[in-house]
Length: 199
Image: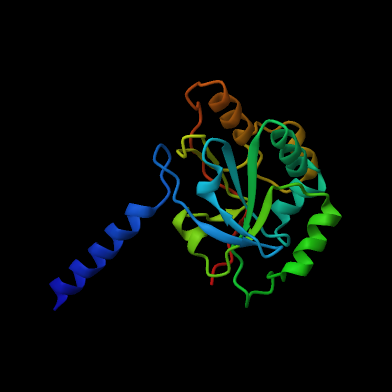
């Protein structure tokens, strides 16, 4: 019985690892619904760079990047460079940080945020497929659909707004190197922020 249990656990772990996001491998496809009720399918953006940003408006680390206008500036900058920016919220609907779509739309408007889509992942399946641990947790996918960066947005791991001025931005570096056809100098880093509030 114990051997059967161990085998079942091993099989489950193997099956999970087959779809888990890994830098250098194809990014797991997904379909989510955005705050306007429209489907967001990763496969639809093949041929373009895609940034995934895990988000929770209540997180102080997210507040830092939005109150400093850092995240919005990046969204706008790379939209102009034909890059798709998808913001994903995997907060459990029963958690105090959860916000309904109408409130999220108000938040996005207030912050002048400019992702191509803001999608909700209430059951956490997409977040878990990408092993998203924090808000923010950032990913860069190249036009071939390969995950080329996963980790922190930058190297300043605090919550002070002025830190963004002197930070080394890993997402920017990955996008610029990928766009230039160069190897990614830092393909992965340890993310920082608040834990994702999974179901």
